[in-house]
Amino acid sequence: PFGSTPGGGYTGYAMAMDALGNCYTPTYNSSPWKIYKTTPAGITTELLTHSNMVIRSIVIDSTGDAYFFGALSGWSDLYKIEGTLTEGLSSSYSLYLDFGQVSTIGANYSPDALAIDREDNIYFRMNHAAVYKVVDATLGPIQNTSSAAISLVLAAGSGVSYLAFNSSN
Image 1 (tube, helix red, strand yellow):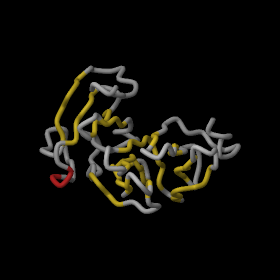
Image 2: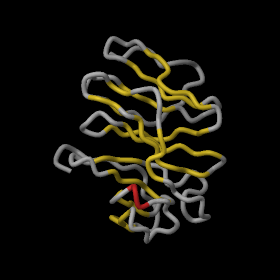
Image 3: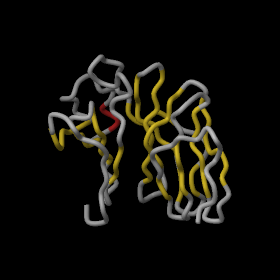
């Protein structure tokens, strides 16, 4: 129903849908890294391209803004793309939460999985072992896991795969 994949080199593993029915899918296999937009009519275009940033995972909140993890030289940060419910996403982004480039925070493409609940709280997976909630992005950069910007939700030890919420949270 959404048309074909954007190209032969496309290997995205995440997708988010906005209020207009557009699907946004980041690719992560090679530079330049992209976020594709596919309309309900099946038309696929590049929304965002970056030659140095690996783009991973994406979520969209109830106001139409999107958030994604981007990694430069192996260091991950959380970025925001402004959007609206009537126009969709813009093609520019800004740093939302800095993960500080500390060996146990933001390194080796971790954190990486994102989820958002119905109250627009953002959650992420860290090192495949724990889930954190973004409490206040203005309190970054995050230098350790006890940062006031984030709150531990689940400490599993290992084996946390991906995150998702249903409409009831």
